[in-house]
Image (cartoon, rainbow, N blue to C red; front, side, top):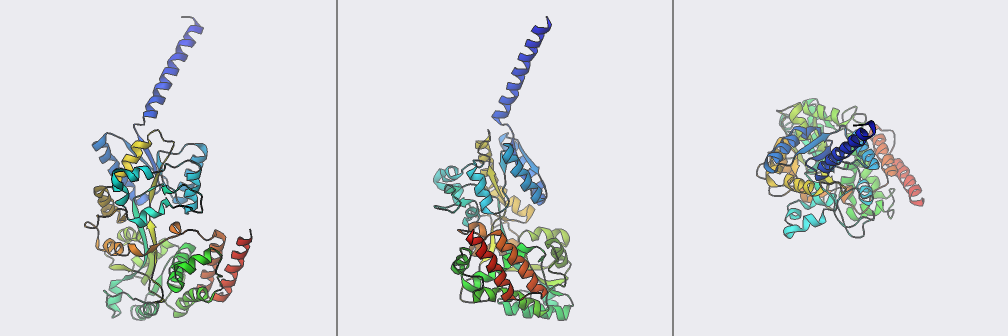
Length: 430
């Protein structure tokens, strides 16, 4: 065989082999899923093995951590056209909307509507709302369901029951009002010699979440949203009242001394070691405290209300969600897997193994006492991802920094209200 003929034969073999490999890939025997959840790595892989045994379809979970690195990888993959079959979107709802408009995410509305909407109706509405878009939404996204939530996050106050008892307080009775909360925390500090309250207020989002809850309780959700929409000023007396709650906490003397520089992990460590009576954290902390201090005796309770004029709302919604790549050659199989992942058995397994609230109903039986308590408050959740519009990040940055300065005693509530409104007005003019 001469050199030219040998070259043609080898080239033909290469093309056949390449097309064969490409064909196998297009059949998609494996579903690749990217995620950022360190605490669920083992549990997800265990479920992948179970699904392989049940269906013969291989699932590969790929972990990329920390979350900011994960987000950068997803954005880079989208630009390069290399997204996996299934992935999650971290960040604000406008980020999810941008991926949808770019054609990266599969519309799941049709799948959710099958069999008289059995799959759709299995979710808590509060979880599904985070990955859904309604009619005439401000993002210009087609109305529908664009993701599959696998758990729910709830943010509440929590307290150490043992410190309550030591301070002569009823360990089964949480403070119902802001003033009661201050009084209880003062007593714990005086009797037990520990901080009354600890939180990772070095991270502005924790301050913002709490300010949001108190704002909605003070002025109602309608006026709160009207402020975001530019119809109400942040110098409004009720907003100054909201900012003043942080001054009152500071003046009460219950705060950990380094609270405005403390990150959430440090605050969690402090609370786990019974160095503080109260904290403000998310449902994910159950798993954190279990690892840091398995015997910690604590519980959660909703926001200590500051007003009886409006109902209490607490920060929460879908914690983690998966989206299907609309260009995936195995998108039908990917949808089938996500449907299986949110069935009762798998949801109960994840709740037990990871201490996260399930995103679907009828899984209450196997929940821990802490999760059962949190589940009772799912009807009062609120979150930026379910609001009709969100505040500009530049305004939030000034607000969060301003609240830190109020807690440090550097500025007054009136001063930061003016600074926030000044930035808001500049944003509105653009």
